[in-house]
Amino acid sequence: MTPLKHRQDRFMAAYQSCHNGFLRYCSALAFERMDVEDLVQDVLLSAFKKFDELQEPAKLQHYLIRAARNRAVSLRRTAGRRRELSDVQGDRLLAKGATPDQLADVHLLYRAIHRLPAKQRDAILLFEISGFSQAEIADMQRCSVASVKMRLQRGRQGLESL
Image (cartoon, rainbow, N blue to C red):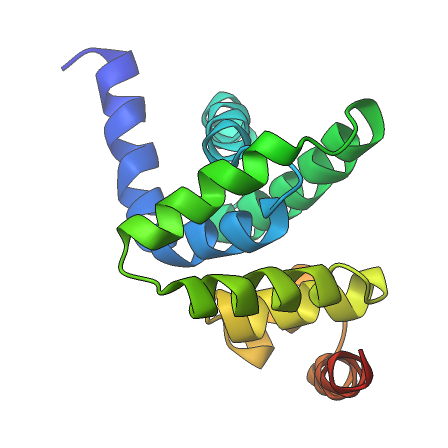
């Protein structure tokens, strides 16, 4: 087995366990702002390049989430909103069986989520959309579980008022 193939196998083994949550997070983070597939590919390429440098490959999930958030912020700064992305993402949801009413609800929800303060928004996206535990989020955000609970509570209140 070549060194590159061995590295790819190790990376894929580490990535497999966080694949679903990472995709859900990226989908919610990118909604109406950038192409999800581009975001995921950029972050995965970066993670693969730095995989050997990660002190604990088991923390790949945390690296992916931070890298996705940072990449999304960077992309938002350099590119304006592109309406066609909303249409592409809407088509994807419809293809997965969403009704037009559900699609409208998703658009409203994601717009409201993106109006929340950054820490609350990330906590909501990671917990409610991506399915990470509060302890995992605390580790990713480098804060206490109590802080995550407060961010979730305030985020939910913010969404309710929006």
